[in-house]
Image (cartoon, rainbow, N blue to C red; front, side, top):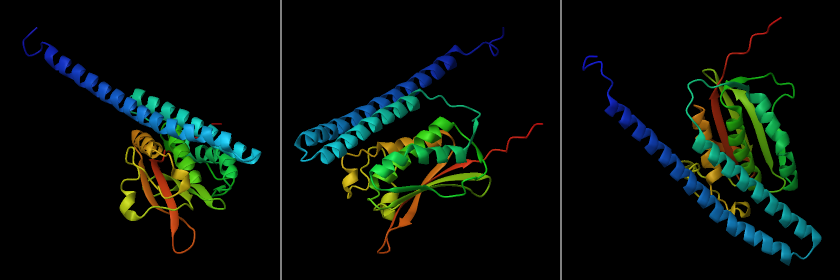
Length: 260
């Protein structure tokens, strides 16, 4: 074998080292995210547990217990999402799923949480809306949308609305839209709404104990599926103010051919 054709073992070693460093960076980020989420959760859970003992009525005890249960479920979901992101490997080809079915199923999934908070959660669109195939991992986009819905419901006051919709965009795009009637965000703060560990919308009682990690996870899941996530004005709620609108954009796929 000639010198030119001889395999360069040094190049292979460099590549292995780069992969190992990238793996270690992902692991470090996972541990930092998980520890931050756990630290925030411990304080919130301890406070809610103490409130159960000080409750003046059974209704107050029930409401506090439900809030505690929700926080535990949210914590488990976030840690599961972080673990999936840590283990995720890039893929050349993304599968295809139905955006309408994915979004509509989440409306049913979060109906109980919205009802408990007195929030009107609704699907905007025809009940028989045609399927809209898009490129992406359905479980990852489902998790991203779940974080957006949880955020919208928790920041919308009782009597307010949260709307979920799917629409076709330009250039063969599909848009998932979650709009709420919460306090919203001024344009100057929207640039950092997905920032890791940022405290968002802190002026509302529902945001106490929030880490901002759920929106950061949503952003990372969407980007992993070659999509975009953007913030805009949500539903109006008087005095010229509006809530928050978060839009996820994915590439549409060609409809499946019908076979006889």
